[in-house]
Image 1 (cartoon, rainbow, N blue to C red):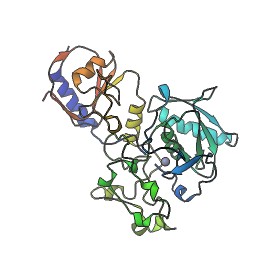
Image 2: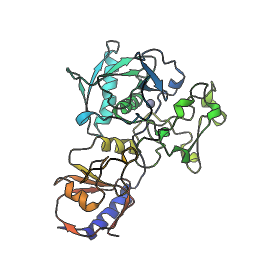
Image 3: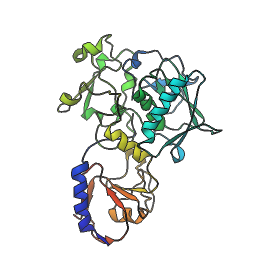
Image 4: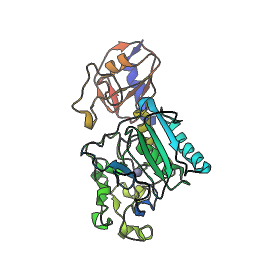
Length: 338
Ligand SMILES: [Zn+2]
């Protein structure tokens, strides 16, 4: 028997050790020089590139940018014949970065109808989420595991971090420095889900020189940059955004929630996430996108031995219950018991 009063003590400890921030189904661009490369090569007929490296159908309707996630976290892949064995192994290593942190499995295609087709190109880009049928991922930066991981993240359902609906709180987009015809790359995705606070460290964040009209932005960033980080975050992050050498804490956390373990359930007192406000289930199933509203309900839906993940909020609940489970408060800021 576990009493909620003792829960509070447990949760408080979790908060202290795990307090951090982050986000979302959002957003990206790739290699440092990629925004300047032409896109013609490798773009399937009927598709166009937005945000530097995201493939969308030419006729895609507005408001359809929410991702469809891969069924059961299984992502069948195949390589184009133009990808050599060295680069195939590099791509598989990038897949491993996500497999290590989320419940996803990239498997060689064996007759699967929905799959990614990875090909050698002059550009890095990908569609967002599972589109149905064959979907192309173009790669030129084979030597960068985390540029490939970035493109795979798009395919898994993530947009660019600086496309978050709330990005203007953290960033200034210097539209007068954006290369002619490229301003659409800095559009916000107002319908996108987000999780946690703006993640400057995300592998899905643009660098400060993305799509700059300066030919030498990297050496004149203060006057050429397209993205200025606002105070007080600028001192730490102005020159650090756009990294492509690791997954951030929030990249990891977010992907692990988009593709959770089977016995994970979620509680979110401030539910729902943005695009799903008009969708409710009764009772709530306790998934990431359709979480339980209360701790008690979350406890009722989590399988014995599973994990209950509690999102920030004040849960003014009392009671007691018995069930073996682990509790996580990955963003902290959780109060239980009033
Ligand atoms: Zn991208």
